[in-house]
Image (cartoon, rainbow, N blue to C red; front, top):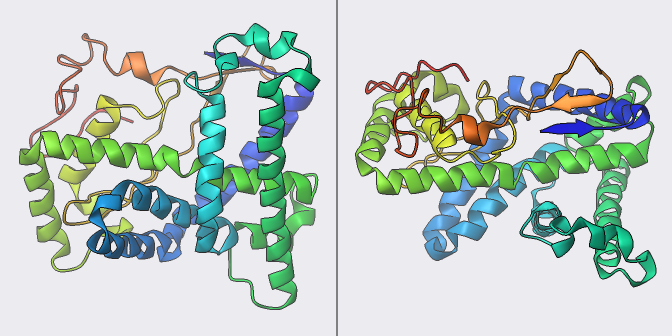
Length: 321
């Protein structure tokens, strides 16, 4: 799949990608300052109180992690999650009919185009929310009450970045928070499904966690010592790719995993593209993960869990992701 963009838009994309990569790398290196472990514990408490509401509480947990990272205010998850869902449905083929029948979007004049009117309203409300979060952070900094977060870091170093100003920064930081919700919730849903359908691997994961972590809940720092769990997570991502049109990289782990009796976190490195040498500034290409993960020549039984090439019974996974 190719994305052709004009040079000036490529400039915006490049500097915003660099900005985002820098902030997420810093958070990864700091192991998210314990935010993920804290929110995982909050989620477990909510599960005990209301287990039937696990879908909402799971989405809200991921949203709270991102809100705490970006604005140091987990309560913003309440407006952020529906805002993220609104953008997701607007982009989806299952969303407005104009996503499938594009001429309707272009041919109907904007004053009487219900799809454009609705999208303009959604866009403006979302951008106003992002800017309000930045302004509140700025006010809290002036009052000496603001905790560390992405927005505070930007405001303290704004003159050193390539971001044009508060408007662009509020959008970039807001989108960082927004895209970290359902892109993480989705893999966790599929992981839970895989464990339900394959309880023998749930038992192996639980035994490994009990052996390595003892009475303590697993943390990001424990991941190197949990090969069976890592292999099951990676196999879930191959079995049911959350982003079928783009290559997800499994190098860094962070947002939240094993439910059932324990919770863990994994982080997916943001989707990474490669530039095509014939047009380095105007063309970005993403390999398609969906079809490549089910090719019979590389995966003998692609629709079966634990059947991908490189899977080993001892939990080691030889495939490089």
